Image (tube, rainbow, N blue to C red):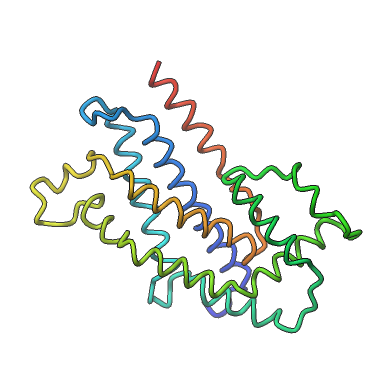
Length: 231
């Protein structure tokens, strides 16, 4: 593994963040389409939603909390990037950074770049250079932001929820296998959504990959499927 360039690790981590984001959005989209009465729910969709929830948590646990050296972790890669850039000069207004972050947060999961004209006001540089400085400046607080996300993930006991309610590994359950088609609590989905969103947005600043998730078409295809089943 020592001979693999760092950029391959970065690409791998970012793809996993995209995948966690996609799985969460799949889960959320399906749950929004399900009837409140679980008995009438489409069992295929419910199983798919719960499996997507399970997968999102598994990916986040690895990226944020794993202690295995062979697994892809965010922290070690982010530390290297920050160390490399610590002497770089940055020319950007803090207010503009805050405004940009608020815009992409409001537009999540589909950023609307056409509305970000404020970035070039009073700054004659190319938009790419402006965004590069924004990312570098935001990266300076990256480790603090990462620790906050990790703490929030651990505090909500998502891995325990996955283990008992979705992955059906708890022998104390009356019907462990039956847990696959039980409704998740709205609170679980809402809280996971907050964490996934924070990680997805922060990763744009940390690793310089696309702000838009390249797996967006999966959600579009899911919407078509859900609508067809309703009809």
